[in-house]
Image (cartoon, one colour):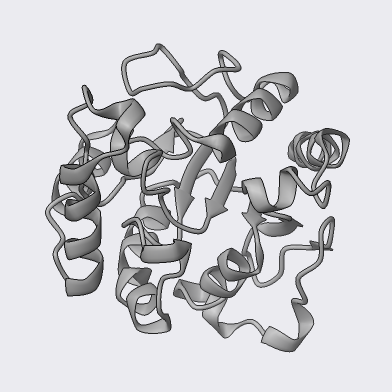
Length: 226
């Protein structure tokens, strides 16, 4: 990873801008979940992860309390990650299907994973102000990923967040309606955008998002990068 991304990560993990989120992420890290009592929880903002030369940017919502907030890596250690990384692996973006902890050997190829919120929120619901506070991190991250050609947004909140950062904020919001599989060509020199339901347990366990539906998203994204 290049020096500027490393410096951004070091700055990000020390962020304490949102008192409610700071209190929650640290409380969770202290109390822990019974099955993870032997873990030293991360309990800080979670930085982006992947290939610095990536052409594909993937944007989620926020870290899970006992997933990324525990492991310190995006989509790692919870049900969402158990659905997310196998799909990336099948599409050739991930080196392995399982993501358990930061030292498990997982690497990503041609994609970078980030989120609009960097701290685990109570009930998985960051407030609009908390998401606004996080916008600057995504703006700065995008500036350090020079090869991005396309963006996959996981959920409506991720799409809404993308449309508030940098040059994306100049796009007409009415032209970007969220729907699973919705695709928007790049305009004004910006990357194209592809929408997917978020791989949350709420979506995957109810069948709203199936493995086949998710695989189709990654195959389309891969095809559009050629």
